[in-house]
Length: 275
Image (cartoon, rainbow, N blue to C red):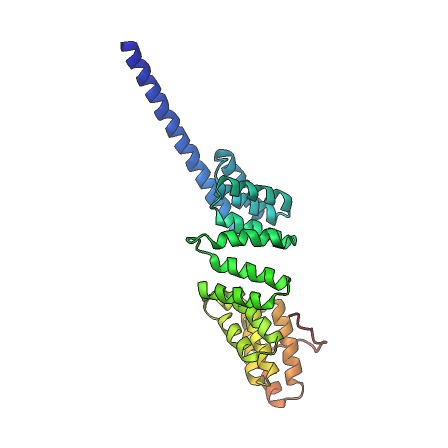
């Protein structure tokens, strides 16, 4: 009887020790995962991959770790590896909508549109997923590629309904309306695409100026171009804005006088707008 009790105590102690070691291992994995994710967000992809591989070694069945590791491989131009890892992530956790969204985005990138759409449709059914605005935006991208423009508009409207300050959806809507010469709608979209958190998107400010120019509101166009040049001096859109300013001021002495106070490039050929 004493032997049985002693054996039970030993097994219990062993079980406690094993459980404690597992907790320590998982804690280390969590720390590596955190460092890896921070580097992934900061676009330090080599460092991100190093930390996430270590996290995966300690916790090989963690779907979230595998998802982020897959994206590190993707940004390191290893698409095949990324796809395999994302498929594994989804297999481990069929409810991982982030992994589904990421895999679908890669499928769009390699033109596997039906596979991408199927995954996005699955994500749409996840009622607690907080990033459905991205799902609708991505479905809009697929619809645009398929030339289904009415469907594209519908998805973009759903996207901004889910999140009013989702800048890419406003910008894509604005560019569509601009291409269709629906200028009032384009102006509304570009305004929303440059307000609040969207201030960091220079393309929205540029296209707003360009839209004002199309309806001969030249002073408003100049104001937007000047705002862009001041806020985003290194952006490619700043170069384009300076060229548009040269065109506007060529035959307008009043505008030209104002702009002489600012540095502008030498006159060059106008760049075309890719809608």
